[in-house]
Image 1 (cartoon, rainbow, N blue to C red):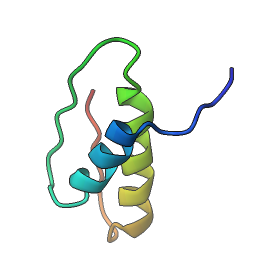
Image 2: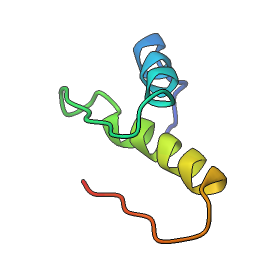
Image 3: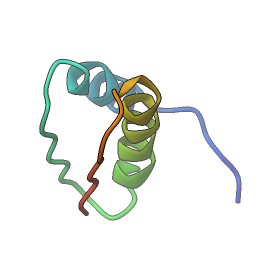
Image 4: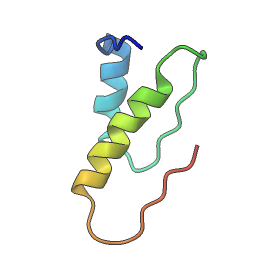
Length: 57
């Protein structure tokens, strides 16, 4: 699997998501929604306080 750099729209989605608590991604099958949401999840987990965490897809 070849990893490609994030597109400008994907980078924008990551930036915008840092301003909100709930995120809903929509788009075509190959729009990298999963990769973008996983980047945000890893950032959230890294910075979260102790306790339970939930990610639903």
